[in-house]
Length: 347
Image (tube, rainbow, N blue to C red; front, side, top):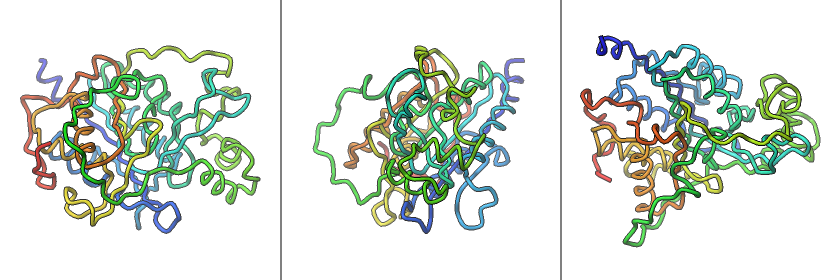
């Protein structure tokens, strides 16, 4: 009976890649990251291709990764889930930090909030991801890999397992290699305001929330509806992290940037542009066909980046139990051969 139930486990994924082609914010490797992740999900973890939704801003894309479309795809995925199911979200693109909006703070503090930058700049914030995780059925899991700048803490109130406060010992014995040429997957707040102002027609002196609410209304992040029936009121302190179904593997710490690596400098990716963190994850998975815990995967990806001269430190945010759980609940009795597209190196 147990095996019969296990065989009915759904494995659902939403993959998002934003290259922002033709703009001053253009990146090169984000769509490649998504295509590689899709191949790995199918070949290694047994995801059905029909259960992997892909949203990119590439030429001819049927569904663009706008803020509303990303949130809708994630909400639909969670709505399909039942206890025991495995949900996965990969994002490659720009990240940003949003300063507090006076009189509208979330959780009663003045810290900057993490957000991803969809192709239409309708930010999806840490508050949105918290609301999504809170809707995941008990016993299911929601794993999020974000290869973007300032991605540490993208699930609001999630417990830090590996990060600036709970770091790993420095195991590097040798000097790291010089880092290859790369572009930070970071959209400065000033650049965000300039773009939003050019579209909304409002002065750039306004907070991003004002522009986003004017442009997108109800589709703007729940964070910006605070005090209007949305998120926690400013005076209410944020609750302590509690065990839940969310698992965040971030490409860097909140105060760091994640690298977008040019094709000519990415040997492991077969000459394709990619995200440094996405490439490191693929390299670790290829070298270790057996299940790896979420903690092991992040620790090994950190080591790969350090050895190759990258100054970003991937982080892990989740419950204690999920930190030791296998990445994407991979079953040791059903280990699949690594995808031929993955690197044969052994980090």
